[in-house]
Image: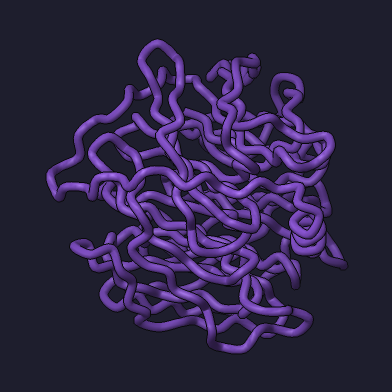
Amino acid sequence: MTTPTSRRTLLGALLAGGALAAAPTLPRAVHPSRAPLTPHGAPVKAGSLFLGTYTSTTPGGTGIGVASYDPEGGTITAGTVVTGVENPSYLALHPTGGTLYAVDEQEQGGVTAVALAADGTFRVLGTRDTGGAGPCHLSVHPGGQWLFSANYTSGSVAVHPVAADGSLGERTDLVAHTTPAPGPGQDGPHAHQIITAPDGGHLLAADLGNDTVYTYRLDEEHGTLEQLSYAALRPGAGPRHLTFHPGGRHAYLACELDNTVVVCGYDPATGVLTPGSPQPTGTGSGTSYPAQLLVTADGRFAYLANRGHNSLTRYAVEDGGATLRLLDTVPVGGDFPRHIAFSPDGALLLAANQKSGTVTVFRVDAQSGALESVGTPFAAPAAVCVLPL
């Protein structure tokens, strides 16, 4: 799965040929309590690194990669692999740090929970059906009791309860993106992300096919979603990934189809998102399939991964988050940077490069935001998500 277009065509071909296994159905999990967060599993040590991969491609991964990295020099050292998860293309960690979650990006989409043990071993707790096809993103509610996922192929978002041991219960809601109509050249909605806003009271879901970002309210007692509003992007924009400024009143959209970034205003009281004008990615003409933005913890700089251009764009964040000023682009050192992430202290930026099957590492200058390549590219077949701890 190499480009936004081939995600659909290749996934369809694999499904038609029976190359993707169905997610297993496991016994019903216990509904979570509403008690405060309690540890389940054991938080892994600092410097651990998890890698999401595609297991259905050639070459491809064999599961969730586990490695470690040097927080100073950026060198990555190979570890083991968590097997038993098909196409774990996106990963998220429970707020307690004791459970890892992965999507199963296949026709019968699933979400899988993996318990992290103090001795460095891992135990797959089970998989739940997302009710849709091709889930490509998931996130955990800050309260730790609900997991959200976005079904790309079928254009819907799902909710699962998280039990006391970190395992997942049966789906409590599934919402299809039926309106507005798909954008030009699209065959339908394609949900690409669902996250909780910094205010904690709203969820936002970016849909690439409908050129729309939806705002929902979560019923935390029953795990259901109520749509409050939606923000329409210009036709053909293809909003893929939304990232909030630490101030909580602005967010930044990577639009992969028209090769732009959009600064949005955000009202925490209502959850209303207001998109501004499209801005350049610094990659020149043509479509470079921008993948994702990161914002530093101090809110001063933002970074964009450009897959076609194989680069990282650096922006200065100004006016309290309301403005992005393009500074420069640097080569990512790999092919098709699908996902980027900061180390917990923000000193390193790591990039998962899908086509080259590598992870590259950059040191982030705290004053200027400049990126300096460090270490050597780490081999990771079909790496599409990187989660440093």
